[in-house]
Amino acid sequence: MPSQVDVLVVGAGPAGLVLACDLARRGVDVGIISASSGGFPGSRAKGVQPRTQEVLDDLGVLPALRSRGALYPKLGLHLGPLVIPKTMMKLHRESDAVPFPNVMLVAQNDTDEVLRDRLSELGIQVQFDSRLTALTQDEGGVTATVEVAGRVETIRARYVVGADGGASTVRNAVGIEFAGTTDDSDRMVVADLGLRGLSRSCWHIWPGLLGTRFMALCPMPTGSDAFQLMLKVAPSAEPELTIEQLQKTITGFPGARHVIVDEVRWTSVWRPNIRLAQHYRQRRVLLVGDAAHVHPPTGAQGLNTGIQDSYNLGWKLAQVLAGAPQPLLDSYEAERQPIAARVLGLSSELYASMKGRPTAAMSRGDEERQLSLSYRDGPLAAEATDSRPGLRAGDRMPGVRWRNPDGTSQHLFDHLRGPHFTLLAIGEGEPDRLAGIAWPGSGAPLRIIQIKSEQARAVAHDLGVQAPVDVLVRPDGYVAFVAHGTLAADLAAFAALALP
Image (tube, one colour):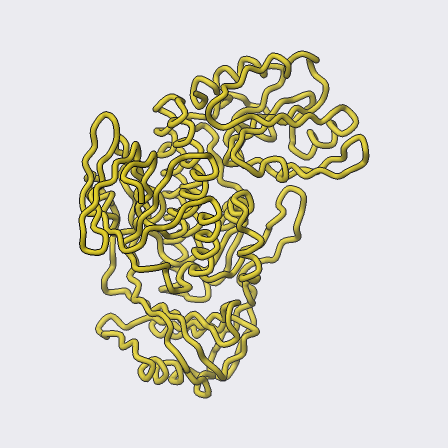
């Protein structure tokens, strides 16, 4: 690890790895450290939502991850001697607007590994066995004190980002309050097991009586014998996580007496921990992922929200390092903290329903897919007062398809992929409006995509706008503005906020 970097990322889980990948592909000098001796070994966060898949597609890791993942299986509810099939989430068809419509089941350790591989391709290695012990800030940057294999090193960074989990050393070092609750009386064992004697065709659920003996065994896509166990622990019990005790516990449930546990690969005892950081930024220190918000495991929201934190922050940090106004970093908290608060409410509600009526929490809808999350009315939504229907500043840019004059098919996501802004010019409009664009030579570049009259009407219709229209898409795939004959003014307004 160099003694000086532009950005030091502390923590090498999904959020930290995504941020490091995004910064590295933008040419930012980034370092990433982890107190752990190696990558996370367990399946813990196993649901990758559609919006997150779009992020991972942009970063170039989705094909590798999909090769390790699968669609979620149907539920099999064990009610006495009966196994009742139940659909947890509706399957959606792929479309131009949403090319990755379904939640993917994939172990967190696989997600981490493909991200580390991508980071290595970008020339960056995670420095493991490196524990942050202190931070000091001044006007020019941050000095981090790090213990590495028994010795003390100092790393100087222009910015430090804490991606180091719910007990974040970074957050504690700068004194950011982590408001919320932890219920130590309500615990759940989460474990990765190798076992035999149970069908892999469904996610087995034993809802128990009012949730007091809840157990679930989910077949994982990697490994013919791999299952993730979720087991509710009685308030007065101390969980024993030996293979012998887990074998005894599992076979005590109806329909599981023939199960043989061959191996315990990873275990954890989880407590309901619902917290949100009061701030996401303290001068030159920022927070992402579990360092900023922690969630119940229901709804597959925590990992996804953390990855999207990093995707929101990455381009903004790179822009500020290139000379964009400092307040651009304040927009990170303004956009992402309300999202986390809303998601916390969603996942907490799902967990509460699982406590009282376990089967009530076994359904998933569009809210969890995170495709409808928007930054409308946020500090970067330049047209917040625009009352037009359809696509608006702050919205996720949907996919759309059109044909070139030579007949070749084009998909917008193929043009969005990469660390740049995209201007989608739909229709003829004023012939000189694009020629007059002055874009800075530093920071994220601009890519202009022109869709001429023969295709413009159909594309505009798919986006819910009226041609001619110009749509600027941010590097994180959200709309910066929708300009109807006001491109120069809207571009100037956005440039004052986000460009060097």
